[in-house]
Length: 191
Image (cartoon, rainbow, N blue to C red; front, side, top):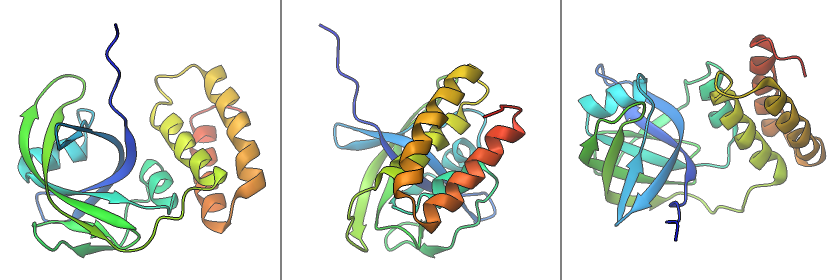
């Protein structure tokens, strides 16, 4: 019988660079035996930062502009200092988890950092994603893989996701969607 894959949660990981600046990156993380697994591609700023500074935050937000922004060159999001680690969390976070990295496998093409939860803090209630927010996150995943996916697959997915955006998007979702569509078109994909 095949083993079931662990659930992947789309979050924003905030790490600190060598000079102490926060770096925000969208990432799918999973949980295993009470630890959070972060698997950044190599090379990446998240990989470098976690190797250097073994603390970070996992940020849960419904502001999908942060996901889209990280993939389109908009990474300067406001952060606040953490409570129990030397790190930062997003001001848009509905909740955040502060982690200490306790294990590391340097596999290719993705490393795996194992984080132990130091504390979890709730800032506001999560009311759920509307369909446009989910569509923006899915489109962000597509944009992160433009060099790996066939053009027809990207077109097909974007055409389907556009329906949800047109029906349920608010101003934040429309802004994020616009950034992602511009990135796809800049990659030479005609929609």
